[in-house]
Image 1 (tube, rainbow, N blue to C red):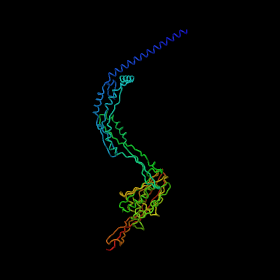
Image 2 (image 1 turned 45 degrees about the vertical axis):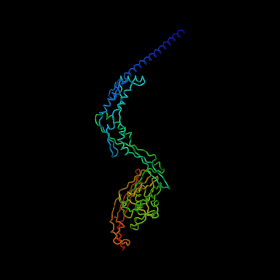
Image 3 (image 1 turned 45 degrees about the horizontal axis):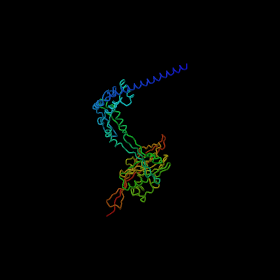
Image 4 (image 1 turned 90 degrees about the horizontal axis):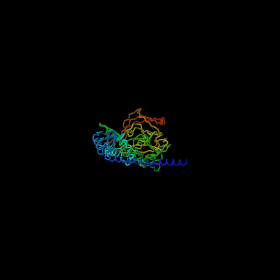
Length: 474
């Protein structure tokens, strides 16, 4: 019985071995035949696209590369004069589809279609050929655009939009900021988005029989500086919190000198959190010894020549910056009478006088961060600006328009003999000004809470004109 089992087992093994080799032979023969068939098919279509190939809705099977290219080169000739209009700020330029060489990429499409089913992989070729024959294979169109021509149309805009990012500067010497500039973001055209906009509309241009108009406001990219204002200093000074400006057209040269000289004393001042700023302390001595020149000042009820005339232009300007910054103003005094300089491009009543050492201009830094005061003095524009930098804590300062509550005319002119002037000479040394009671308010809020609510009320005295009459003989 045992011998019989062994005999049967050997027989089964012999049959299984035979079947295996039969299958192997069959597969080899099948692959050989498949290879021969594939090679024969490839040979037959080596210069043509295999059957069943479409590009979009156009049948390109069994066509040569040259025939496919011809089809799409002819289509390119019929593309309409669609236009792209590019706008940046107030500048506009138009480019037509023909100018940008927009059309079908005939060469690429012909090559892609012709290569299907002709790779070195026999099984892959068989699958592609069978699928094309039974179901058809559709390729998507490829398009061309002359990017050099597009860049040429965008070049003027690129130059207009380009701004280099600027690094912040911050340098302190002897507790005074001697170099400060805020960082500034740069800008440049977003070329990638512009190209995408044009490319996305190429199918519509090519497949449409009608002229089309496309408009694009050119997008820009913001570029960051390497050093931001916040990174440049450790004082928390990151942004503008207040600004004030005044003008002094018509000032004599000595007065202009004094304005610039006093402004330079304030420029670069750092005010620590909780510190009270004093104008007089930072300006110091106002005399010829301190570099000031003679210009008109108010003294003893008269306008006379004196050292430092014009310094009140500086205190007035800083007062306006303090108002705008929303900081508490702990001391301020108005002038005795209305001064025309302080009403250049400004309503009346927003001025501040100083007189060292008794009459001062002060504010307290309650922002919780350092404040930096920077001056911008322009004698060419007859302008002075103070900007206060720090960190905005959310406060908002609202200043009402000054209201003139009452006015009074100036007194009659005063004529005085002057033995230092030749006979027949008349010189005006003081100018008439209307008296007025002027009032404005300031409200400073933070997160809906009122921090400061105050009224600035000023009574300007009427001021008479004064003339000097020459009495000097010979």
